[in-house]
Image (tube, rainbow, N blue to C red; front, side, top):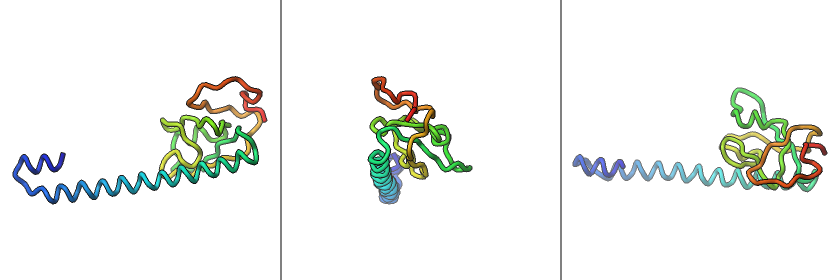
Length: 130
């Protein structure tokens, strides 16, 4: 859009191209960083699944920087094979957004279970019991 604007108004196009490239490099860097964050969160959840099974508890650091979605998920159980929708998309603890500080731990008996994005067959732990 900036290049088209510069072209239409007889302005130099090169600065507009440089600005667009700089923005794209920034977005790509954020994309790569989130990919790394998702892989790290997935590995952490896999480790917890090995110790505690598929039902885990979502934990969040609760302070002024905690997002509404992470705060709502805090203390709830979730199924590791069907990540719950937090902040608008299915996510694992630690990978909801770029500054996510959430983590998974052993499930809490009687805690509500966050719904995943897939339909789930009823099972013995559907009520969050361990």
